[in-house]
Image 1 (cartoon, rainbow, N blue to C red):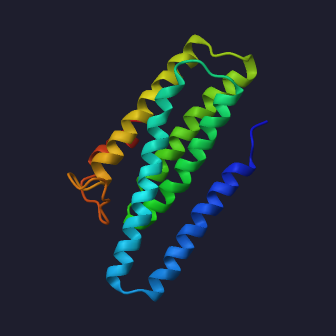
Image 2: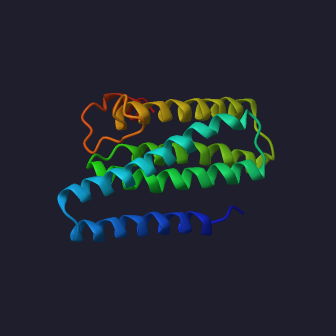
Length: 169
């Protein structure tokens, strides 16, 4: 059985971060608010990028430990995606995170039944890994100011690539 407490803990940490930022917004000036929002967005986007990009390290074989690690990463991605979507006011990353979670859940369920990946599941997992890396690149392109060494955009406008990814999925 896969751990259910870890996603709850990750969600609570993200929730506490959002609440504390919201509370500080109430107390701070507009410049401070934008700075704090930029910090939260930057941190969340870095985590999303890091988690998606790290999927390429799993190769094409799964075991119970790797499945749990991937689930933990996907739960984390979902939480951080919610924070980013709320921060920029555009709901793109959460639906994509949910799609990726569903895709992996199908692969993991099949593995759980047989104890191994079928050739079909191996192809699905390879596609999942490739899409994870693609999303990490799209996040960088859409959400970060080019040439700014990781400074996030507080407003995004050119996000057609993420919409196309979600629609093609």
